[in-house]
Image (cartoon, rainbow, N blue to C red):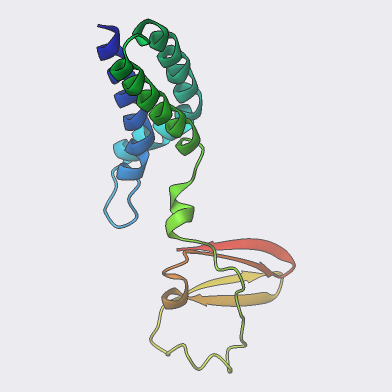
Length: 155
């Protein structure tokens, strides 16, 4: 019975960490309800995974007898430890790294941007900047300063 409880704890921790990654998919439509579930799971995962790890550790004492049980307990605890670490990660940063050394060009010098291409535009304190969608589509994040105001451009 305690072995099944440990299995359920591991499954719950893994589901809690993976759920936001599946719901918050940048390549698929998202629903308001799905976003609410994903953000709630993401917010609670760091605390809940620690609690589940502690409960798993407590259950492990009773299961620590035969060599094969010890192996399963160690594997379960390693998975639980991994969920603690993963719950504190932003997996989108793994996929969409901010552009580290963005280069900027004046409008006349930006010949690589066609007249019919979409841009994200920002105007602040008399200064303007445009960010071609084609250029930021992969990185999704550009840090800049426009009109002496630090901004983050995201797509």
